Image (cartoon, rainbow, N blue to C red):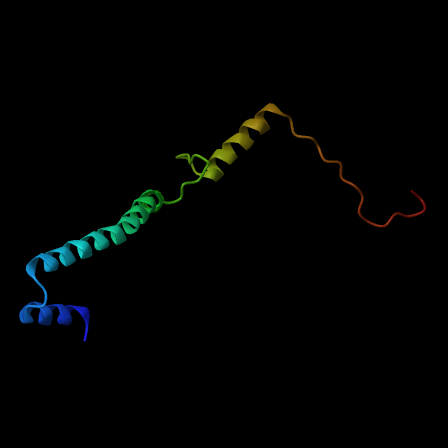
Length: 104
């Protein structure tokens, strides 16, 4: 038999008066509140990390570099063209690739 059933039988039989029953209810309420305090503290400690996680989920990508509107290849091609205009091209010397004879 559990404690609740035993208390009911004691009250019905008159072995437990109303004052004692109220004291039992109040003490069980205090114990429940004491048990809930660590739980509430743990939930408060977890609240800040949960908020950070939610912020990270809302900001996908979060790369350190700033993206530009131009495509990478266009920007690079423009810089190459600009650099080519400022520097003259060097003429490549054509090396003889065939076999050298002893006459030469």
